[in-house]
Amino acid sequence: MGLAKVWYEGNLNLEENKRTWDELVYYIRGVIKVEEVRYERYAIQTHFIEEGESYHELIRQYVKPLYKEGDILSISEKVIGMCQRQTVEQSSVHVGFWAKFLSHFATKTRSGIGMDEPYKLQLVINMKGIIKVLAASIIGALGKCIGKRGLFYKILGKEVAGIDGFYKHSAFERYHHLAVLSPKDPDKVCEEIEVTFGIPTMIVDANDIDVDILGCSGYLKGREEKLKEMISDNPAGQDDECTPFILIRNIYNEEAEKYIPITGVSVN
Image (cartoon, rainbow, N blue to C red):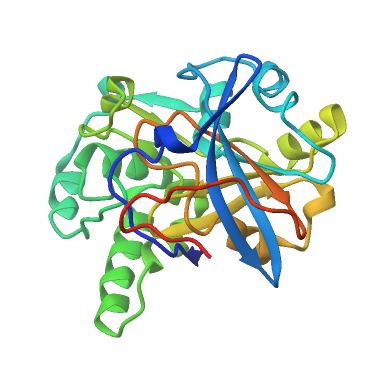
């Protein structure tokens, strides 16, 4: 995972950065320079996406009208997980002794709910088994003692790292009692989108701290580190922006759109 470059507070959707095209709304997220190339990012606002919606229809409605040849599409993994019904209701998770016990030793993070939430940890135990979770917890704790962080997730894999939800402070009440799992076959989904719409696509798990590319279409293969840099400041946001689709555009030597950064947030 790559380290995100900034912290921010609150919703990124400043009115000064708002643009409309026909009936679509998007927000300028500023220019970021990667290997001396200037990329401007456009965060496309959608409705709140519910379980079982078609990501094909979402892309047709929100992305295709704004797409220009050469653009790259970044999609929040949560949206694809919702569309695929990769979800777990909190009411179906029954917290046991080990989840309650181990959650007391988990690191609290500013990027959302981690393993300090017993329901989330119980879900991980249900998925991976208590033996593997105990081993990952012990190795993770030892790793912290010698300055190596993230071993818990490295051992248990991206499937665990990608769990999102059971977050009582989420701006969306739906996520207070719902966990969204990592999407199934993210490479296949991206390839399908590129073939259907002609849009090079990646699915990302990004927050204030980390950026992880879960999958990308064939055109983008082998460029993952560069792709991470393009969204290293998490332009989709972490609040109630409803901007899960980010179009990334090489603007060459053209003048960038006027962009007003949120106080304390900077991009290259």
